[in-house]
Image 1 (cartoon, rainbow, N blue to C red):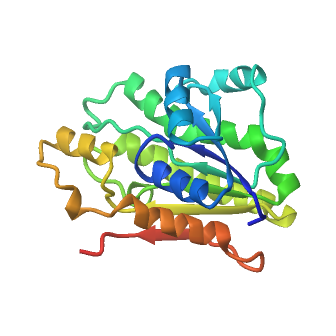
Image 2 (image 1 turned 90 degrees about the vertical axis):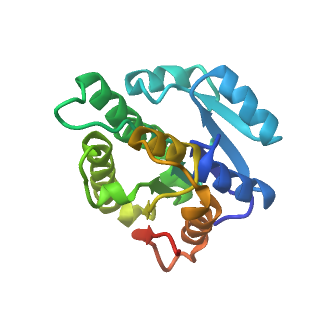
Length: 232
């Protein structure tokens, strides 16, 4: 990764995205943090001094291009880290089209659209696209259909992008963490009706370490897929 690299990160407000942002910020890299609205952007700017913010609602991928056209995009993008995500559990017999669309838009269509919008900068920098996937992108269980479908789709997006951009030097990595101690995990436990004990699950810092390893790998190698499972 180049000195003073510029990273565009979604989901930097909590969990794994926040851990990645903190680590890159601490070493002096430039951050462009995506936020869904101006209020969230203000919070991120306060937490990460000197970081830039980019506002756009991932629930409405059709409007991202328009939203960004009114803001200043970075000239250089060394990495685009997709770590934002939403989850709503439910049986196939109960999930509504609205729920399906929301999860597919945020978890799959918007990452595709953000990647499209930043590809010129990524190609110029021979940059890196990191998709924070999930164990659900590899296996689907009962009540997880819509979320798992979005993550299975994200795997396909990453694999296709890698084939398309490999010759130009753009690297693409999918990271499949198991359950990670985060606000999303707390929500999952709530939806499952289970008690949440963060100490039982992966620390977001451990997943951040994996992502930084992929980003910092010398140019002669590329991590395609990495699965991170709880060690306890």
